[in-house]
Structure formats: structure tokens, C-alpha cells
Length: 563
Image 1 (cartoon, rainbow, N blue to C red):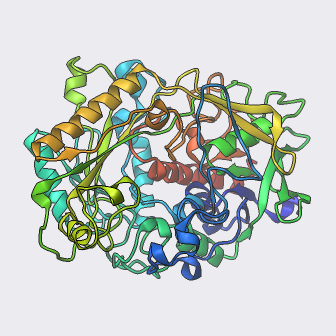
Image 2: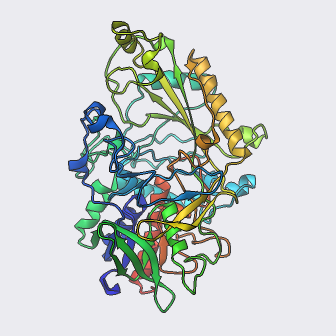
Image 3: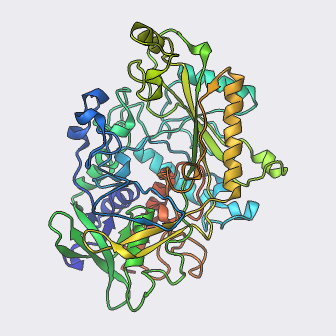
């Protein structure tokens, strides 16, 4: 494929890649999208009405379906053909999708905005670095991406939790009984509760239907109610006639022309093992934070002996993930409550935003950043008894007594889950493993990971907050087993960011405020790799807003022949 065929190559078809491709193609530019995974059709491949018991082999994971058979995740943590390694003492588990649309097919679609404090953390508390953009810079992109994807919520706002202007958000679904119950507990402790913002349609939008609460969002959505790029941005970009999609194309490296600019990529067809080259006037990397960094580090040349666009030495640095901790509790007062329709989205309809800003400002907390709490009820599907220790518990009985216990306790359990901010540190980074390669001979990442005392203190605060609410509501919490690997050592989070952060200069960052490489001016990054810090909020909406902003800047430069 010659450079004259395409104005841009976009690597990755998930949230950032599809956003960039849509913007570029609607501007009349020719785009080649390379996706490492297989094709995926959410209409024919989404088993919205199947029960887990219907799944082959008892719903255990398979090579093509992980972690549950009906989940819309083609790929997983351990891919036989694409290994990665951990340095001694590190326990990163890297979830990768190998399908068109990436993780948007299975995500839960929670889309909070980053707030003003999230972009200026270092100025506020001295930790990490500030972003080269402010909330006011990004707000117009937030507005537009929400309009494009469809988001429900309210215009209520809280400290550092900005809302949207009137007319953008769709009406949210009402709180369910367990959420009203939990809400009372938090508010009794003086902790505010907010309505969740989610990229799920409660009203039709174009060819996409409103959600009718049929099944879990992680299965995908054949009616297009939940936003995923395979039912929205990619079909829209294809309609322009300017997008070409090539699947099974695992990119090996970005190539450079004689002028030192990116002129394309080299990739391998994962079905045949044969390598090919694609050329274009610009390259957009949106393969996910770690994969984008792997590509940059693997793209070595005389000009960039330490990896492409890495004169700053920051590629692979500043990585972070979401701290995560969950407590399950049983509430006797909810035993035997009336059965009625409590359908809704698979995401909680309420969220507990970070409420400790004042305490931090007055020096009463021993950690600088925050967390939020999501609350999950167990009245999903038919009542039952889980396998494991409970099945043999005297508490549940046997036979008719077991069935009676299941019915009585249906809806009596609530899960409280915190999501916390991790501050990037010098001991947490990724590099290329000097020995291990993948099936096609490509270098793989090696991870180094640790969390610090500030993260541990944050986790303990969240734990005590959740236990206080459980006690206030008369609940009994399940035994808590604490392990660093589960609290933040890269083991559980799927919100990885960093590895090629944006900054004010090319001396200590990889890209500028428009996600353009300082070193290679026609190379743009459009995923979470550009994040300068990692807020406790789910990052996807911010990834898409930044990708939109980056694509707009690239359109101007391509159309004016600056590149």
C-alpha cells in the first residue's frame, strides 16, 4: 500500500482509534485502520438472552471467550501467542481484546468527566505532574463526544465532578430499591450520592435503539443501546467511503521516511505469519496504553535508538492503573422483601463521588487524591446459590431448605466497590523484555510495578468508609482478604494509562497538548498512553475527548499540507 493511498493509518479500533477515524473520514481524508484482532459483528455474535447455564462447557473460559463464555471479550489476560513478562515482585495482569471494536464491546460504559483538579494535581498537592491542558480546554470535546455517543445522566454537579451543559444528556433510569437503601446509608454519614453517567441510550438515537435492560453490558449490545464502536463510530466512518479496515493485522513497528517523519507501519498477518507494509502521510497509534508504548519502544532506528519519539526517555514511564477493592455484605433487613421488576442497566444507577476534598485541604487525610464507590445489588437473574463454600453451608440447609434460603435472601446482598487514584511513580514502568518474544518474533513488554503508602492509605480510608455504611445499615460484611496484588499492583485494573504522557515540553514528555509527538510531527497518539495523571474516574470518556481533539488538529495539518 503506497503512501498516496491513505492520509492516515490508525492502529486500533477501540474508543480512541474509532473516534479519530470517524473525525478524519468525515473530513474527507482516507484512513486505513489496522486491528490486531478478528472481525466482530455485535448483531449476530451477541447472545443477549442466553443464560450462563446454556453456555458450552459450563461457562468456563475458552481461548476465544474470556473470562465468561458469553462476554464480548475475544482475547484475555493470557494470550498464548502474545506473552508479556513481569519483573521480580511485580504482578501485572494485562487484559487485551483481539476483536474489532476492542474493549468497547464489553465495557460497562461508565463515563464520568475528569474535573479541573484532575488536570492540575501537581499544582494542588505537589504529586506527579500537571497536564498541559485544563478542564476548560477539554470541556468542548467532552460536550461533543457525549452528543455523538449518547450519554444518560443529570446536570447535577459536585466538587471536581463537572456535569454537561443542558440538552446533551438523556434521562437516567431511576434508582433501584437496593440503591435507595444504600443511598440512605451514605447520606446518613454525610456522604453525597450522585446519579451515574453512562453511555447507554434511554432514548433512541439514529439507528440505535433505547436500552430495554435485557442482559449485562459486558456481553455487547446487538441493538446498539450501549455505545460500542462496532455499532456506531465504525459504521458511520465506513459510510463516508473513506475508511478501510484490515483485521488480523498486528503492527510490529512504525516506519520512518528519509525526512525523519513517520511514513507507515510494518505489520504481520496473524493468520498467515506473513509481514506487510502500509504507507500513509500520518500515523495515529490507538492500540491501548501499553501496546502503543510497546510499538514505540520496538520502533528503533539510528535516529531513535531508544525507541521512536523517545528522546525524552519517557516512553514506558508514568504508567498507572485504577486501585480497586470490594466488600460484599449481607443485610438481614432485606430478607424476603417483595419481588418486583428491578431491571436496569448493568452499571449501578448511582455512584458515590469523592467527598474528601475539604478534609484534604485542612490536612486531616494522609493521602492526596481520591476514590469513588460503586454499589452493586445481587438481584440479577433468578435466585440461586453460588458454588463454593456456600453450597455446603449449614446456614443454607439442603433440598427444600436450600431453595427457601435462596428465595429469602434474594436481593439481600450488596457489593461496595471502590475505584481509587494511583499516582505514577519512578518504580512503575514498562520496558521491552530482552529475551522473550511473541509468536512472530516481536518484542514483548516487561512490567515493573509498585504502589506507595499514599495508595495504601487511600485504600484503607475507602475500606473503613464502606464498613461504616454497612454497619449503619445493619449489614454483615464478608471476610476481607487484603493482598497488594489485588489492591493496586497491576493485578485487577483494566484502566491502564500513561506510558507516553503529554507535557509542556519535549524534554520530559512524549506528546504535546494535542497528542502530537514532539519528535515526529506526523505521529499522533489517541489512547490512554498520553495521560499525565490517573484520576480515580474511569478514563474512556477522556480518552475519546482527547482523541477527538487530536484528530481535529491533525485534520487541519493534513488539509493545509503541513505534513
